[in-house]
Image (cartoon, rainbow, N blue to C red; front, side):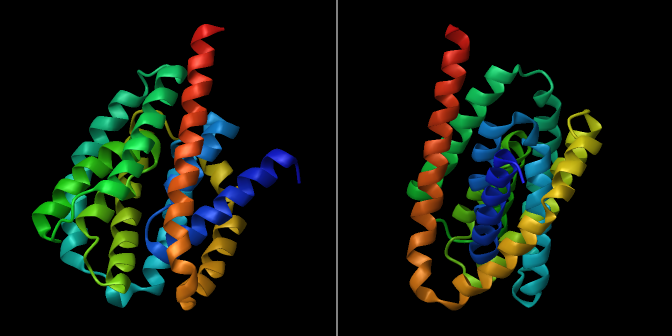
Amino acid sequence: MSPVFAAVFFAVVCAAIVQSSTGIGSGLIAAPVLLLIDPKFVPGTVILLGIMVSFLSAIRDIKHIKSSYVVAGLAGRIPAAVFAASLLASFSPTVFQILFACLVVMAVALSLFGPAIRPSVPSVAAAGVASGFMGTLTSVGAPPFAIAMQNMPAQQLRATMNAVLLLGACVSLASLAAFGSFGWPEVLRGLALIPAVVLGFYAARFIIADPRTTPWVRPVVLGLCVLASLALLARAALSTII
């Protein structure tokens, strides 16, 4: 195993652990790290990997899914995803990295300082619009849903988040494919990382079962996101100078 693939594998395992145990975090962890390693992983392959772990997690927690919120989230996400995919092809690599890093930092800020919103169908639909745009461009689409649904019971939140992100990510991938930004190369990269997804999903059982680990998950995830995004901004700035 090459050092590069080992780094990618480890990042995906960590992302799958966090996504499966909290309902949020797969894109936040994997996307910035993989974009630093190889921009070809983002957004298509990271979205595909998110679909895999969300599917496993949603099936595990299916009895806790709140279907009305899933429908509302998709209603907002579908048109936003199509619009975002239509924009992606027009961005240069440098512009994309700058936009990506700024959106990820904004997602972290929303996760930390977002208002306490009472869960409702309209608020989840509005979150779907923001998620569709952010998720399709950067593969980080969970924070708007996390804000809209943060006051739900933990099991219901995790299950509903994974369900809506699973279906929403499928819409984003279809939109990217329609505009030529997703194809077999991204699929093959995703298939090579299935063992990492499965390993992370099963490892998450220990986190879910042990409440002592819960307080550490969120700050570690958000801290890594900020560091990776700042590194992306620095690399993009250097590329404009050199």
